[in-house]
Length: 321
Ligand code: FES
Ligand SMILES: [Fe+2]
Image (tube, rainbow, N blue to C red; front, side, top):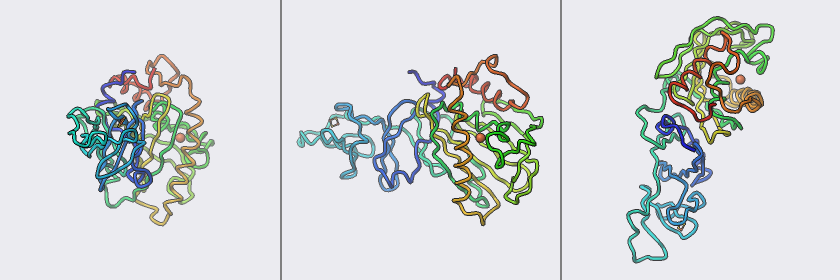
């Protein structure tokens, strides 16, 4: 399938840096392409997972002499992707063409971000994560048998809180959503002043109305912050594995609750996302309809409407219908 240029020229999270401690080289999949990640002295290489000799997966190989070695005939690829040794012909200098397909990569928020193209923009800035006064808690990856746009739209949807996350993020006795606006630009979507009742917004056990700002930074990277009272922000970084499969990390950053153990916060997020998965996986059509004539939209869906319009404006067809 042809992949949209906006997605090829974007950064996508594919793994956590710590994953390489457990498995090196590590196979991942992005936008339907198999990739191999390998790490050497803290530098991460991300390549097409394919040996140019006979198309074997390099991720089945191993590291030796500072190289990634193909498991089939032992070709050695150095960290620039160049094949520097062909064991069957030790006297011969490998041809220039014997090179892996190397992708640009960078590390941000503990994740390895990759691009298959030439992005003009950087990985989105997560301000709170970079702020020393905040505590950062990564969670995920959460695997969904669903298209990435469906996952992002679920993240942007607050009206499901009282039903899917009753008792934690919402309360069925208070399902109303206040009026708000969502603004679209080439920089994404900003939806400000979204009010909803929560039974325990800041861990004190007292229910109150909270106000959220949601932002869409890129087609598959979104964010929210609670704008009143103690500050809690989260970035949702979704990796589009292929049109039917995705995985997402919820990166949380907060300036209160220092005494709450990290495990408790991650367990909470695991539970919340675990409640979302069956909702999103059940949605039909599987691909997000961008024609606003499809499905029904309410005032409380303004962020979702803006997201669908933004995807259309960016020319995203992957994961959409
Ligand atoms: S297929 Fe990789 S060395 Fe032959
Ligand atoms: Fe949810």
